[in-house]
Length: 184
Image (tube, rainbow, N blue to C red; front, side, top):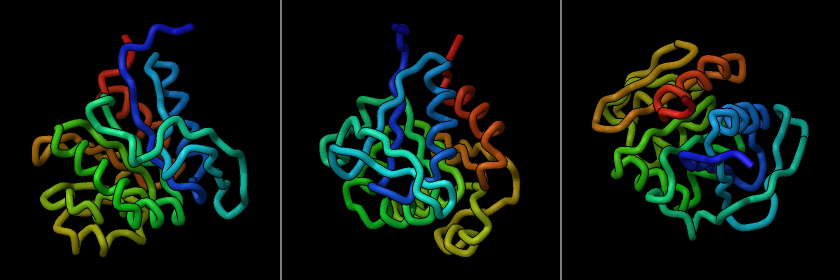
């Protein structure tokens, strides 16, 4: 069994998760080696999707209500339209995002996941990217939107990694390794 140096939270809703945006960063964290932990709205399983098609199920390690940012070195927010929309409507998920920001811990969000950051009101003054349909929401929340495969923003005392789509996962994962200080 690997000796884990850091624990990384992955926060998802009960379904609608863009599966590759969960599994690819998860494997990157495992390979670091670090310990990924799946946070969900409740214990049980969550469902991944390959775009609109149901895919695999994943066991939740801890419910949002029981989770605290102090237990983790960073937070990864996978995308998926339904996933991000459900997360932003969950007060415990929003609380957790605010805790990570208040603690100055890094957050990585891909595709539609920045909606959760907008809901938590933590992007003001930040520069980030996302799936293009979020551009207006991000700008209305006081942030600057850019069209880049990955963008790392250090503004406001915490690091935010963002990417647009699954096609950007190689750059997203490389930024997670660097910013979360994972691996050797």
